[in-house]
Image (cartoon, rainbow, N blue to C red; front, side, top):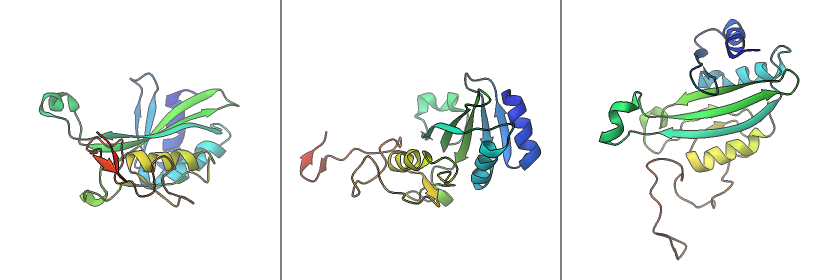
Length: 177
């Protein structure tokens, strides 16, 4: 299936308030999905016989914070966090990218992590990918069975791939910078 056909089948199933955008100008075309409906959309993507996205290749988070003055004119959008899902079907030999756009902070309260439903019940490998995204980017995956740090120590402060992250000068007596 082409990205347009995948998009059309999702809009037909969920409507344009859930499936909000198809972006085809990039190398990997992507479809934007509403955060609240992500788990249902993921289940449909995997179980619908026409789609059959049986493999989650990758899940990652990207922080688009407020740029400096030089880059602000080219930025073109509000600061946000994206959770990006690369999916493929072994059966149908097609692939698509799904994106969920989240505010940088839940309820615009700095320090309150944005939330998206877990898809670990749809693709088991998401368990590890979501933990990594939580740890490094600071996205809370609601309903995750074991959401805790996977790379950083449990007492680590902050999320290292956030653009406003400040690397600590010292951690348990070990000098950083």
